[in-house]
Amino acid sequence: MHTPTAPAGVSELTPRLIRAEIFVVFAVSLGASGLVALVRLVGAITAPKELRGQRAVLTPSLAPGRPWLDLALQLVDIAITVAPVALVAYLLVRSGESMRAIGVDAREPGRDLRRGATLAAVIGGTGLAFYLAVYAAGVNLTVVAGALPDEWWRVPVLVLAAAQNGVLEEVLVAGYLLHRLAQAGHGPWRSLVISSLLRGSYHLYQGFGGFVGNVVMGLVFGRLYQRWGRAMPLVVAHTLIDTVAFVGYALLHGKVSWLP
Image 1 (cartoon, rainbow, N blue to C red):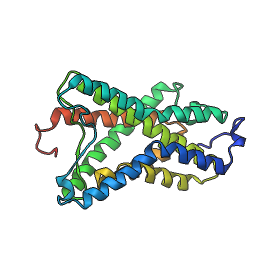
Image 2: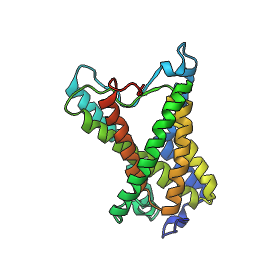
Image 3: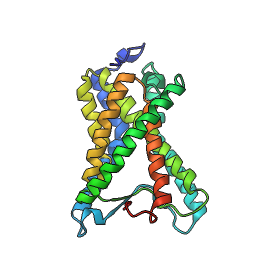
């Protein structure tokens, strides 16, 4: 299992300061998203329609009927959403480390790509089957992976949105969080549970299936991070999974019977 080293500067980070730092990072990023997702789930449960009769749109149009404004807003939204990664990079440098400490670098591109592609194939296929099962059971909303207009920029924006998810989630929830929790003295399994529950929380807006599926994904991804000490394969895997989901939905929706 990978054990984080303690370079110069890390000794200044007491467990109390680490907890405060983690709170701040997630209060302006995925932790806040988890709170919003919880409220949205409560709203969906208390709505007149059953869960699967409601929609959870992952990449909606931001300016319907105005494609150029829509494109501009999509790009700005992606940039703002991924900004907490820069905050994490800054905080790691302030503590005497760098993004290299969590395996976000270009040291092993071939291995990272192979590991990421293999993981994407396993998790992606399993995830699709699980989604169809929980949707049929009525415990999940209908997940609409993309609702962008049919413009030339639709596929590139969907790919960028997938990369945004991969970078943001794996750098923060797998790499940074598990790294800092280990430095604060938390055991690997406790850290893994915390990371996985956080990952599930900001997917609650999709329904109970979205929560459970992402907790399981978090357990797998988090454990692999603890073994490898690198977040890059997870970034690759997550980006590939979401790219296939987003682009595949855009191309197949309405053309195949098995896709809600």
